[in-house]
Image (cartoon, helix red, strand yellow):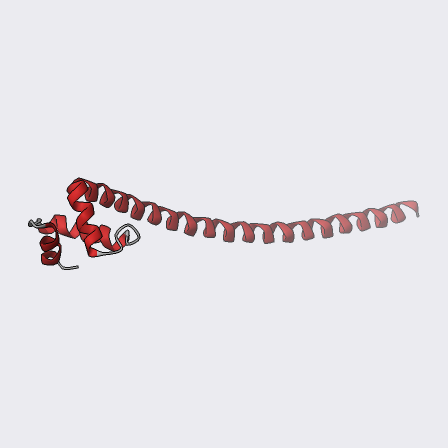
Length: 116
């Protein structure tokens, strides 16, 4: 909807910054405002304060979405790090088992040598 269309529907002019906020809300919350007339009616009843509140919610939602994306990326990185550490742990366990077997064999050999 164009600014002049909205102004015609409400019968008054609005500042450009107010219209931009209003349009952002209209486009984002299209389930609340299925028609241009619905936007105008909402404005007539609630005024710009209601659109400012919706806009504030949008800004907070954008921040929340950004924070969630950042946390997801961090979580993915931590999972990769955990997987690498798990693989290293498995390798160390394998090496430890080998060393224990080698030590056991050496003890057996030492016992045989000692018995001669």
